[in-house]
Image (cartoon, rainbow, N blue to C red; front, top):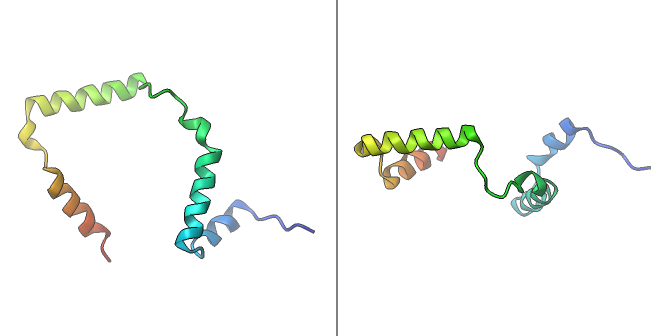
Length: 81
């Protein structure tokens, strides 16, 4: 007899997996959802508008942002326990 797991049970078990096992699960999920990524890289109108607005904001005020090194440091600090 094959036991079936619910989605809730599967999700609960994920935290018990080793890093290599999680990588294997992620690879399988990527394989199964590959079709969802086959959009030929085209932007939706909403994505295009968001990108245009961001580029415009940068062009009018390039000093308003942070250099990558600062952003990376902030993100890494938040990820540390």
